[in-house]
Length: 330
Ligand SMILES: NC(=O)c1ccc[n+]([C@@H]2O[C@H](COP(=O)([O-])OP(=O)(O)OC[C@H]3O[C@@H](n4cnc5c(N)ncnc54)[C@H](OP(=O)(O)O)[C@@H]3O)[C@@H](O)[C@H]2O)c1
Image (cartoon, rainbow, N blue to C red):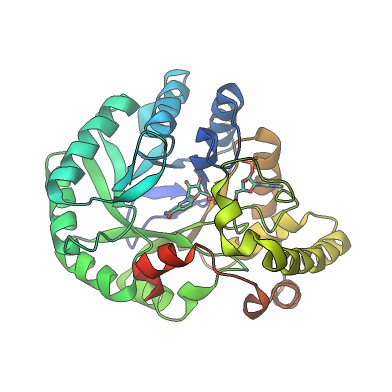
């Protein structure tokens, strides 16, 4: 069974890796609900307790899928469900902004609890900083919901050091969700030292740089948002695939896959870094779980880092307008 760690200093025990459910709602190409539910069950059977979702993943579909998985034999108290809110979409699925005002936070939570069929969520987190709403107001509303018993812990997502400090001053933050991988190491300069000082864990997403650090991104389905991300476009994509080829060479020498080395590298960063495994398939879940037990020496870690130097990665992780709006990139 998977080892446990604590989420935030003195916080609740969770598995040392989590499962991210986003791809199960068709965000990265078509998903099969039966296989997605089987993947959630396989993860829980393997000892994963931390399940990550968002109300805007498939506009409620992701939470309804999780409800179905829970109803098929997963006791509510055996899992730690974390939910992102605030992302706004129109009926076509297009993102149309954010709303993390206190009223929106409470309203979104009410719908989330109904869709999940649960009495509480374990951790509630604004997906992005809403430029119109001071973080203190958003956190104050979540703190109200914690007092009322609808939420257990507070999280943040893609926020910068100053915002994290302001939020933590209102109510203790248990975890920051943010992109972190061999290809995305921006948090190491300011954000990681800040959360470590404050005793906040990181739930790391994009640990495969959304599939770039595996062999799965040669053909993207129509409507896959990755086709718009600079890293996946034209010349940049070709250069990044060269980095992947270098990682594959290292992986071949070790008898594992490039994805496994990328996951093992994130897992090696510290007990307070909890990798979110992003898959909708049982075979890839098994591959990722095996990576968590891969012993890597300091020399091997250095070779892995040298094969994918962050400075050699071509293109930003999001589109320019999205990067400009990210509090974590300021
Ligand atoms: N807070 C935020 O802003 C934010 C943003 C994005 C994601 N997230 C959360 O983080 C979770 C993980 O993010 P992510 O999905 O972008 O992470 P990721 O692990 O970097 O990328 C997942 C992609 O890699 C593919 N993949 C996984 N294992 C593979 C393997 N062994 N070989 C080939 N391809 C493989 C997946 O396809 P298959 O599913 O087909 O295996 C999927 O397309 C999400 O589910 C979500 O919960 C949070």
